[in-house]
Image (tube, rainbow, N blue to C red; front, top):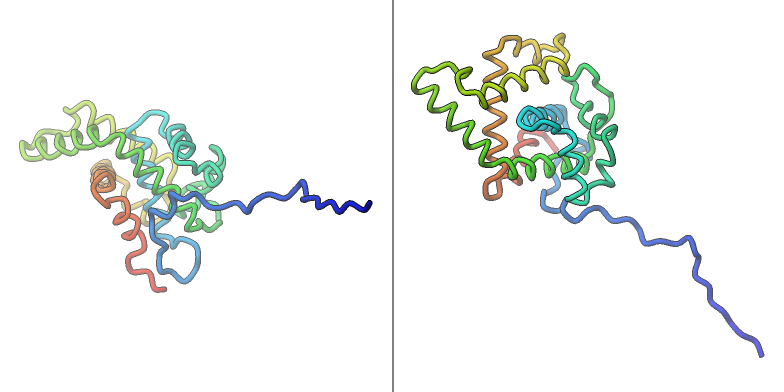
Amino acid sequence: MNLSVSVMPTNSSPAQSKPMILDNLPDPAISKWECPTRSRQQIDLILLAIEALELGGSEAMLVMAKQLELEDIIKNRVVLWRVRCSNPLRRSYIRRPLSVEEAKALVLIASYLARRMTVLIRQLLLAYQQMSEKQVPLEQHFRLSEYLERFRIHFRSRMNPRRAKVAFYSTDDKLNELALSLLSQLLFCTGTSGMERFWISLFDGEVP
């Protein structure tokens, strides 16, 4: 008696699909499937603000990547460093594109971390508003002063001072303005559809 046996290949596996959470952000209408310079800069600065808000910010980003099931894109600390160094303003700038998929992952991580710190972000922005109205030096608010100081240190240690855009922020006042602007953007990301609107804003003015 002849027997016909069908054997499935042991090394076959289903095609790897991208994380579904990436679909929460629309695909941008750009000519290349990589992010323009302005987008790379803005994403890195937003992450820099998170690092200034939270000690161990880089580790928190990796933990969040795992929670959001984005570890296939942001695999480890080295990968996180490399994608952020696609920002041309950095001292350690790496000439590599930042893919749309990588950018989506970074924006999702930043937005979810911002949501976790919503109360703190609101408190700092409220303190800034009140102190500005009373013309009180920001240094008198410990938590706000701490955030601004950390941001200035991070920015100066990681950005290339020979770049014109970096040189513009040579004073403490200019860096404080940038840090507060980024704080407002982080709060914006925590609102209804804020993450999606922030993502879309990264590509405003880009010609498809």
